[in-house]
Amino acid sequence: MHGHNFFELAYITGGTAEHTLENEGKTISAGDYFFVDYGCLHGFQNCKNLTLINCLFLPETVDETLQGCRSFSQLLQGCLLKYYRMSLGQAKFARVFHDRDGQVGQLMQEMLLEYQEQKVGCYPLLRFKLLEILLLTLRGLIEPENERPYSTSVQEVLEYVNGNYQDSLTLGTFCEQKHYSVAYISRRFKQETGVTLREYVQNVRIEKSCELLEDSDLRVVEIARRVGYEDIKFFNQIFKRRMQISPREYRKICMNRAADG
Image (cartoon, rainbow, N blue to C red; front, side, top):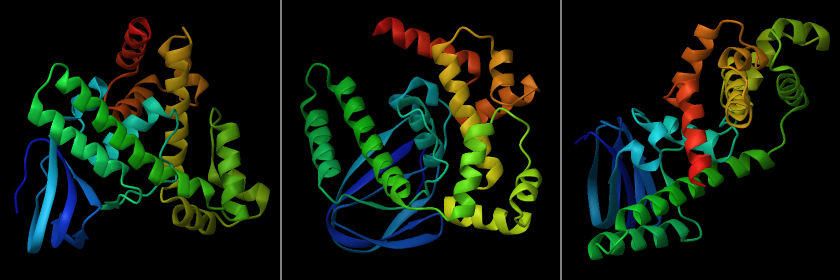
């Protein structure tokens, strides 16, 4: 077992092995790939002709706003809010992914060749290919979930939150209107979406605040109110926890990105 002060992306090109990540074991084989969190312990056992390609990277390599990110879930959440403008409210994070169509494997081979040849522009190109792998992984997480129908009760909760996120939302009020049990809805919502209602509300609000920070000149305190937070200090805490940077820093990066483009 070993750990390191960076993220690791490993793609299995051949053979099999037992891979242990945070005391969770899984058999891996050709076409499987996985990300190892910053500082996380992992290792291989019972290797049989195992071959792989490793990519070691810092979170800011993907995007400078992700500096300080330490977990794969935070890394994907940050990428998704920036590049897809949506949250991972319904997605469940896997430990090991499988490259069904070979796209990720092709990108890893291209990255390996690029790194070995060290041509002009090598590192920017490596970054772009790494980002492409992350976004392909996100598609795999999101699209199956979006195709899956929710129960009527959970769908009603999702519509309620998406239409009223700017208000003071209480599950009790919703359940009273719909004649549902609070305990039942809470349990059903977590089972079907993979997150608690509170987490989902926060995801929606932060997603909407990112849109306003990028597309409007509104002050941060006004944006906080518009997405349902009267306490600006609490809004800043939630935003930084989700995005790893403050709202003002996020807006500055968006402005710089727009100026460069």
